[in-house]
Length: 155
Image 1: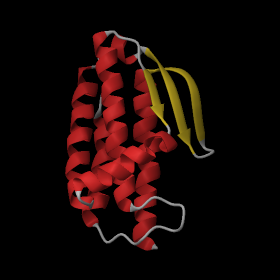
Image 2: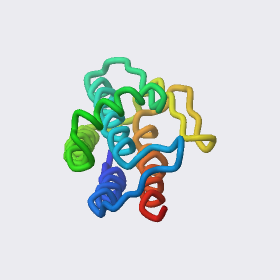
Image 3: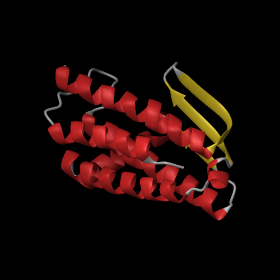
Image 4: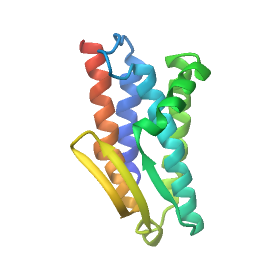
């Protein structure tokens, strides 16, 4: 599997974060720090799933923001703000991309029980080839959070 699209999506997100200057979020929305923490926590889950696929083990992948919220808030505190979170995201994304590079064609097609929620735009509750889940991450999930970060600057 080619991780070029995934690397490109992360490069855009990381460049946006490095730009900085984020305003406080509207009520009920995530802050820039929470968005970056969410992405890093999600990377860790995707890394676990990718490692399981590479090892030939069954795995279920859940990207549910409500499940991550306590972990996200704890990561914000643990990393001490946006700079620490950016360092963490850079490390987690690089690890995920490196593992993705190791997926051969057969492993990339391994079905993984996948549970995704991206607002009302994308709901997945079924086994998907792991390559498809990684593609959705690069083409839907990361761009969604990139847009949120841009709105926090524009707002």
